[in-house]
Length: 213
Image (cartoon, rainbow, N blue to C red; front, side, top):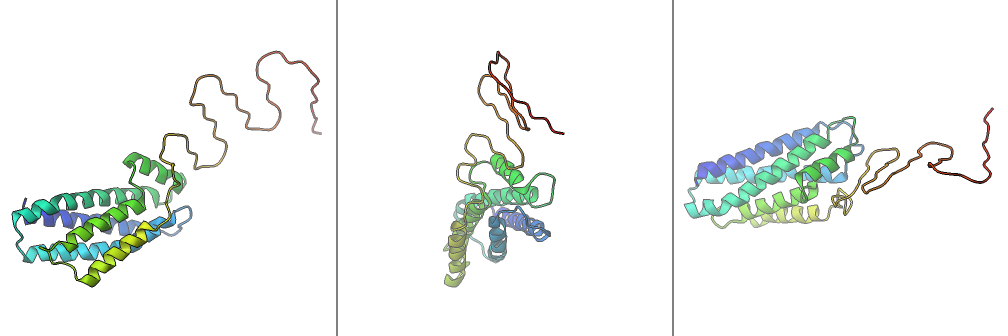
């Protein structure tokens, strides 16, 4: 593991976060978008600034191999979260026929638990804290680390962008209209219009039909 490899990974993360910021900046109508997207986007510049400082420090210093072995899993994890975050922003934010919440749910379900935007951002901030606070890097002052810690606390306090249990097995409807779902055995009879519904069989009794003139 070399410094060049870690620097390349960090540069890649910065590029991914830049793309995420650009997607969010293009919003002209935020209707249907969970507020967590805004809260996450507001903290991306702090992460990018810290990573740029880290990259510059690695370019001027020469940490030993043990340092790079320690940092590699952290940087890899940070990149994975950044990729998932950018993918969600790209799939959810642009206007499309499907509602944003429906697209968000599908994106998070595809990427797996832990992929809500606020959870990914919290993980990214924690990774960057570990990188910035490493004694070999001597990257951040107490004040700078304090900003990262405070940002992490704020993100942790963000209301869930998807309701609890949304990703549990089940049926979810984020659109309008009836949802006729039969996940078991047997026949399902649906009447989504006006009037009465008669299921096949024998019927006894009085029945009144109204007439519209």
